[in-house]
Image (tube, rainbow, N blue to C red; front, side, top):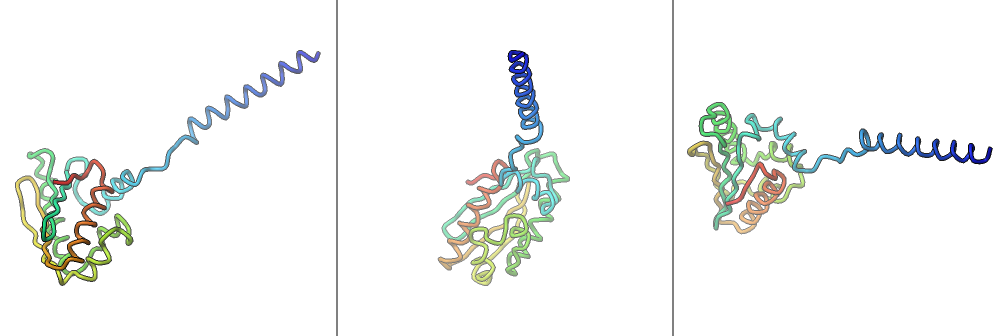
Length: 167
């Protein structure tokens, strides 16, 4: 009788362990999305082009830097057009101190943003089309603004993960 009770207890315990393990695998093992995954997903709401089909390129220079976006497939005329439209609008916004798209995506505390908002009159922001995309050049002679541009570029590369590279 005691052996039967022991078997029932063991079978019951094993059943509970199996149910818990299966539940963990099916429901509880979901990892929170990484910051890069979150930025990629939210980016679809801020940028009209496909992040999967494009590449952000950030290049820091002695007097600022260049932010470029290019299509991965040169034949992708739809995303090419959307890149150019978006970056032209963003360049106009940045030149006026409006960084609402980047802060909406990356957050208000993103490195460099507060200085760029304050010092927007201390930098020249220029849009131009490039082969397979477009770019925004940031130029300044102000050391605080220069540091902010570089910090902002670093933060974007970090946040965008495989969607962005440095040159």
